[in-house]
Image (cartoon, rainbow, N blue to C red; front, top):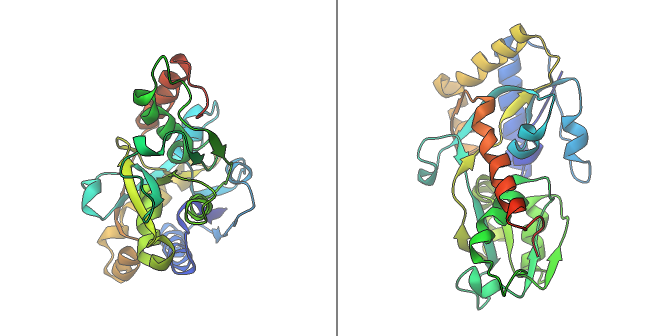
Length: 268
């Protein structure tokens, strides 16, 4: 089987740390597992279709929309205080620090960058948040939509490079970028954040035996109790992993439904 932290491998140091953590989980669970990178431009959708996933980060939005869902192994609890010790995250709307935009409303009429329409943090959460700003006389909030840019880093680079005025970014990814690539994100400013959402889980393929999934979950949930992993947890801004349920992710589909029924199928 494979393990992959592509969603949160935002830099070489974080990628190396996730690799070591997954290798520890595999050894603890006594499960043969190869840690792969699956770097951009390889499609995440292709990764999530594989039948040999053992510990793979998956966006909760496509997970919740699947008829044949992968099995939930656990979800990370980021260590920064804003997460409140829960397996949640936010979408942060970022602009260039030197831009005149002091609020999200100031960016309306400009250029909006996004990762993919299948992403919660990079599209679905932003669309749901923007609903409150649409009016009968202002159905389209942006003059131009830039994307799909696929990764949070490329969305950030679009803003910093002047190709977009604002972009929604997974808050945990942004925190990891601040930790490991501070020069990259130093020129950004957050002008708004969405409500909390269940953070992307770690999953195994649907056909993986339940006994193996149970061993992987047990190993993952013991990460915070292992002193030898303290440096890795600090590197990854990780408090611990917690168990999650399929029902936890239904809210993401509900937020999509609300936007679509309001006549806002696409951000514009």
